[in-house]
Image 1 (cartoon, rainbow, N blue to C red):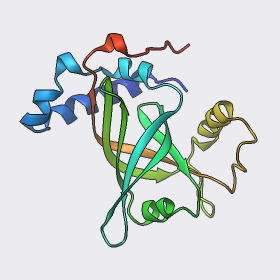
Image 2: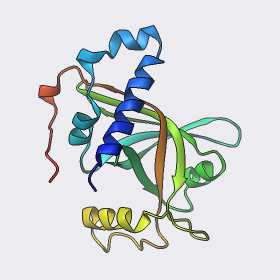
Image 3: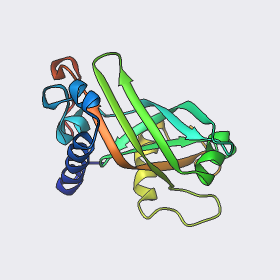
Image 4: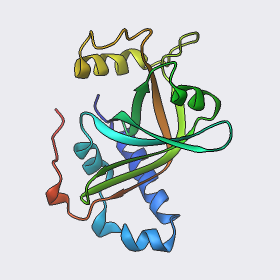
Length: 176
């Protein structure tokens, strides 16, 4: 999947607005010299990126877990087992926070809400076939019973910021 010019515009607007409304403390750490623009970010976040995903239980207790994240068209995509506690939490309370960090070289922090892409007893997201094709290409056709063993989500961010003190230390790949 390739980001469209509109995807990049929307992602850049989100990054700019998120940083602008952040606290002065955060802006003292993340500023124009220590961040990435939308195009750079999409070139760095390729393939599978491990996310620390935070959800909330029915009692209001935070839960964090690791998920395989894929950054496609300016949004995070991730999956879990349909019977996982995380799936129950997300179905009832779709607000999440996610972080992807690579040591001290990169931090991508996101807050938003999730959308289920392939519900068992409901309509699939319009673009689920394209997302599924990407995932099967990445993981292989036979890793899962894609209809029953895994449920996938798209994180719609309302806040996202990036810490990258030295872009030269990051692997940037060109997308065809």
